[in-house]
Image 1 (cartoon, rainbow, N blue to C red):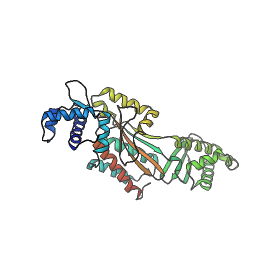
Image 2 (image 1 turned 30 degrees about the horizontal axis):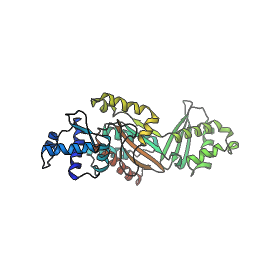
Image 3 (image 1 turned 135 degrees about the vertical axis):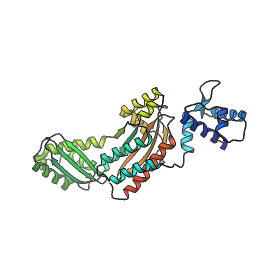
Image 4 (image 1 turned 135 degrees about the horizontal axis):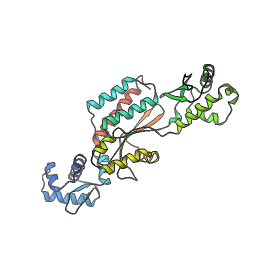
Length: 332
């Protein structure tokens, strides 16, 4: 059923007031918060109608009403079209961009950190399309700690890998030349697939250990979906007074399979995606898709249904816009 303008306004006020105060809305409270030219009895009738339509629910017979999952969905899908960001959030993102880091892992971690600090909620960065990163350079360096450092240049930045093996400088140089000769211009998937065919074994006898460890490390990197989870914003959840909900969200952050399911909830058609987790109505997700080279990042903020959708969305939209500018500059 199509909501009238008055019902939309009442629903918006009811949800925003509950987000800020965690208090059920009453007809008297609506009268104080809105400028609608109607009586308390009319507002009570509208609340009853919104409850019947599934957007609000009454906790007690004589008490006020709180939003339902359906109400939250309507709010975030229909009412939050334009966002503005604060200067503080803007400055943090600009600092991130000015660092011009070449490390893909560092960039992803800093994205998660900036958003976590801006929103005060836990932040997750999930990647897809890692296998399509195009290889551009290989630098393999022996370390004094009986390890080997591998820097793999891609079209979206460097991947850093430390191999827990001992190798000579000559072995590392030979391995670097081998990878550059055969795999520059190819994708990570093309490279790992070629080693599955085992048709390069004659060339790598002298540095077989380096190759085996590096390919295994790339396969692990390729299979990872969650690249970074920032839990610094969890403090806000615990301070909200809703301890059980906070504990539940923290448990979701610890379970990678469940977290991936939560991050995959909602439609992927918009630049800002706000959804109530399909199988968990205690958890909401606000996320933005960002393309870094050939890799798709989904940057998501995890919180309760009563989270600050407006502020979180503003921070995420700003980040996406700034990274679009970064991709047009000198960054990865």
